[in-house]
Length: 302
Image 1 (tube, rainbow, N blue to C red):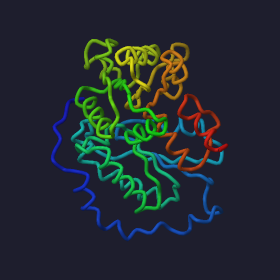
Image 2: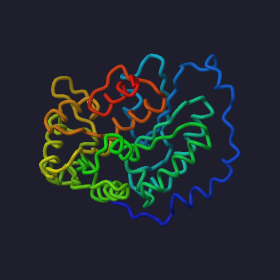
Image 3: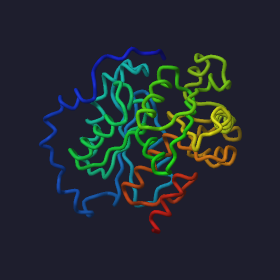
Image 4: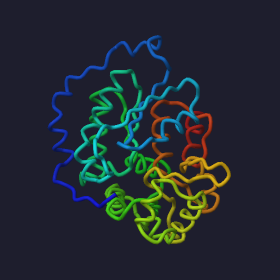
């Protein structure tokens, strides 16, 4: 894992290259529910070289009427560098294209920092996701953008960022992206900044899985660093390994304890992505831990 130097490719330039997709027509075959395996079908994509928990976690809290299909991006010799995400950025649209062909009703992109790897801001990414959604008649949600959407939904503007395992260029990139969305980012710190680990190399050696205590403790330290924050954002898809069973669990499974400890909404990339997908589908999850997901039941009842 290393820092990366970005090239000058922009999302706007990438969009200009993809002119052939303007003629795409989603098959009317999928308009007939009798042709679908599930009434609600969701596609997920994950970065290369990551067996991602998002499809499993989403399905665990979804009604039986919801089906999930996943696709991992293919990038040989991938080493999690931002420049490699730039080089493979076009695969995100390819995934939506394939999912649309297979009758997906919505697609979720896992990996928070894809929204800034090209040096893009919130306006760029909103335009990109809207274009892809319209082109393939399939709503497309990028995890980093859903952090912004969730904060707007809860009406919070003063936020602090628990940047978890992100090394400095990732942390600074997502911080800049959040500020570009007019969020008042009062603090941004990773596990090293928060004093939970001594070096970034130690963080990297954990391979995305951290002690269970880090979930609540990192939230508390982030809140202490920004006492005026109205919410805590958590980037990435970090996992916390349970002391009792050894299972690795994401913020979805820890959010209630984190919110109880801080008294603040916890908006983590996994949770905000699921929230955006359920909202798009018009479906209420069977479990809704945390303040953000609990708003879905209230919206459905309204």
